[in-house]
Length: 144
Image 1 (cartoon, rainbow, N blue to C red):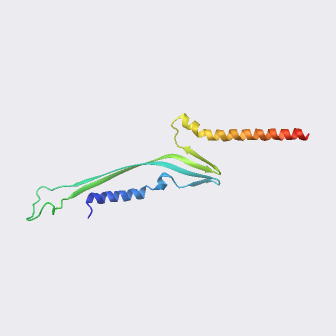
Image 2: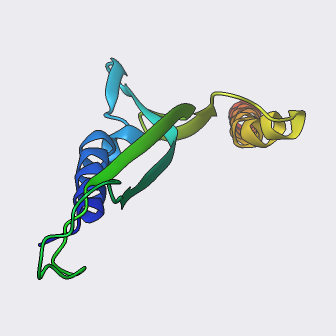
Image 3: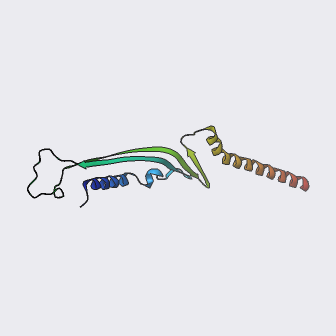
């Protein structure tokens, strides 16, 4: 037979498992536009405490022949749990592009680091378009 404190801990852990699963941290995808999917990402903090003990009531009479091992003392116990769920970011998937959109920026550097891939993509597009224009001008000049 399990000790009462073990029953309390087991029951608490089962309840926590039911409340917190992988979908709490990485949420279900949401279709925002026909080609955009957004996935919420959260931070979960959890704490719980369990305690209890047996106590002897004053004035109980020891029956004849009863040993301390045979006696069952009353048990008192309790458990306490606390949760904190904080949204951290949103993962946005648009076509072939995946971006992580944080909920909070801790500093300007975070914002700059997030913008670097977008800036590189834009610069590449500008260079490609200028190269294409130059190629078309060159071909037009040769054709004249």
